[in-house]
Length: 372
Image (cartoon, rainbow, N blue to C red; front, side, top):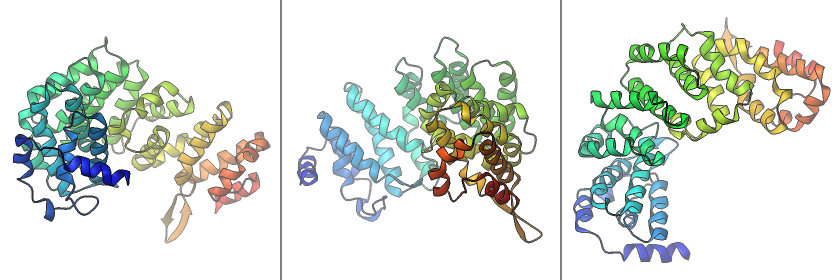
């Protein structure tokens, strides 16, 4: 009943002329959203502009549910993002509404499936925002700055000023590491999207050797690993793995706040999956050191790591038409068996998780599994 009441309240709101003009440009009955239909979207977009915080937040939530599904975006997503961007200049005098609009636009722009049909037209329609985006991106509000920087790498991707600005933000040592790190990520992602891999190497390789901040080194290492094909340096892999081996809670928390980089994954899961998906052979060489450090951490973190490496434990390949375990799988299983030999209680403490993963909690059986 509450939902029905709210929708009546929302549909009864007057529609400003500047919004109605934009809404009339879209055939809402014949475009798709994550829910299929879009008939409620115009009223919800109008509610997004409400000075009533409860109405605005509810409409934002309703809109977001229709924007994406497992990374897939829809015609309605691009239409909504375009309208939201066009509303921003009208609400400079209403900072709460302005931040609500910018926040929703940011959530759309960080989606992995963004660059699809509808993307070029959407970006072209937002070019008028570039001066304001630069203002936000360099401002003191950390949230707004982060949102604007990410939107800029799409809307301002063809401007040399965008790269120069992000470099200044990254290299501004007076800023907190998380702000510098986000600018660094945006710079790397902008060059990655433009397929300028040599530019990434030029900027990040030299910087990695000189940088002392762990978060910045990890972000640099992620991009260097991504663009280096078979020429991956162990120091880059170790920089990423050391965060996991040490349970570097500060860096993991910073990464966890960077959804645009790690997506919906936990930062531990993201880092392990990233290495497994880009350079599994290199990860295999180092996974034993990660696992042998587990007893020095608390039970929850141990289980976090075990869950994150579960795809590696079961990974296999075909050699001469025969399915065999990957090197990473074999080494990880033997490392778990080794932990069990040193401390039989280790496997007992994690027996439920191991059973849930389809693994034995017996050292001999783990060794046998490794050789299959």
